[in-house]
Image (tube, rainbow, N blue to C red; front, side):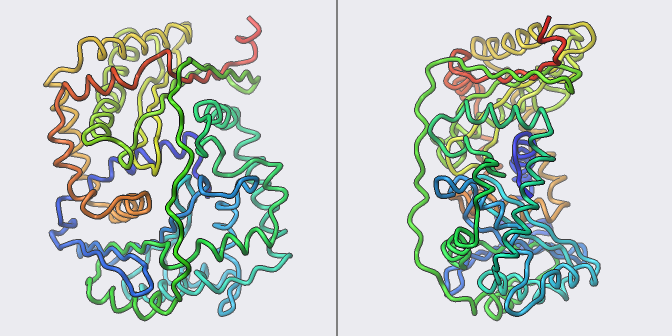
Length: 453
């Protein structure tokens, strides 16, 4: 499953809130989170949670679409699909059937910065899942027939989910406009003309380079004992040979944007116009101390939910918008984006909604946020932490995505304290530094009739 456009933004926003899952140095039931390395370089994180007899098992590979060789867009997502095919030890579909027979679930996803595979099963099946995952880490059987069949699958996925979806098409165009030099400008699913050319040689080279234990993070969350997990991991993953050391993940740096860019898509299938404006901003991995936390809180105050400034002003008070909000993608390996968006209600014009959003941003840049707003935003994060602690998959996702994008367990555990230390002045400074309209990229999705008028 490729996470693209709004789906990726939503997933990463949920991931940021799922930092909630981490109370400093403790899991949901106050058991200590353990982190260790296997001899072959695979990092393992264990998050005990004994409230229910269930376990989430995830393998995160530090390889995503932004790491793909030039001209091979889509191969990271393509390989996610190939990982469900036959190995030297198991027939195609055997892994899926084993999970289904014990009442579990499994899936996978690809993003710009990582590819992850996950299973949720009873604790008694954990070592079996480890065995399956360790097997396909190195023993896939990649024939020309397998490649052709699965390539046809991803081509159809692109046609149905992207090419036939106006919002998805616009998202791709906006990304390619926002990012001028950074590989985030290339869609996770890939460009059609390059996907059509992917072959067995490409897949084998990608597999041999990146699907290695020393390029992977194992996260186990649930009704488990850390020592038992370590022993299982050593018996399964520990048998997989370490691969060659990979070079640092250094990508082209995005130059500072000095102009306002716009992208407009008109489509007869669109009934309600909408817009989104984005800025390139630092992520948790690239920001100076406190900057990313301030951007997180700015997004929450500006447009995080129905108590935010944008919702209250545009939807409730003025009644001109059917939706209005903001988001910040904090968990990215490189620079990331801050987004505001809106859509009109009734007879209101899209331009009025956009102007009202811009006015709210200008007010924060000029006057800042109040101490009460800031404290309420922090409180909402703390409450989200409490709720997220009840979801072991949220915990596994947060630790996995953090470790796969240059962070560590300590970063996750200390995040709540870092949020609490942010001041109103820091939030105002982040808005003034990064939310400059003349340096933004705006995408407009318009109905055909409105565009003609």
